[in-house]
Length: 229
Image 1 (cartoon, rainbow, N blue to C red):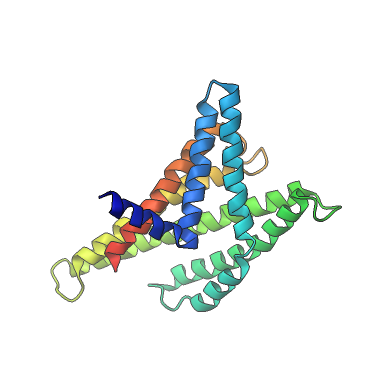
Image 2 (image 1 turned 90 degrees about the horizontal axis):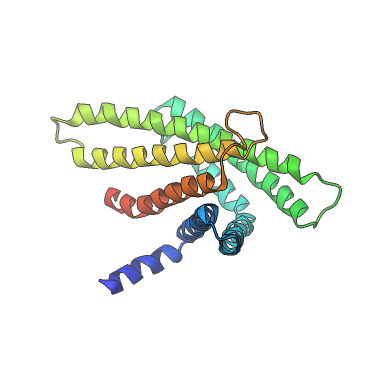
């Protein structure tokens, strides 16, 4: 049993996406623990660990431009999508995601004083706006896909042409994605400057809890998707 668990952990850590999920989970779990901790000394240690995990993820994202370009080119006009609306959402999301990475780089360079005369707060705000827009569009696309799968599920309920169970599994995965995206969207809006919805109103432990739930769902989905193959 323990050997199998170790194999699963190593398999997860062997991929960039899996490692990022682990770092993300560690970052938000410790942020949550620090936020609810009454011992200031221990809380500080949790926050330092959380900050370092987050910084590691940010550093790794500096290399994400080319994979994003490749994904956008492969996605193209979204011909594989079930309908034009989803394809349009996919194209727009890809554009926003592509713009996000150089903006985050500028913020990273300014934060670490590698460039001067740049207002890091403005770049942070710009990256947060991209993050919110990307999450919102992805959520809309996911909800649309859930509806499409529901129609397909009803059509094949009494047919042997398409495996009903496979559509059901795919729909459940999309529902999990929608829930995870909702948590992420709550967090993303909170990173915007004060004055927009609930921006800057969440407490540290709120952010930690929201991020932890989202991260655990993300890890669970990695294993759940194996059922879809």
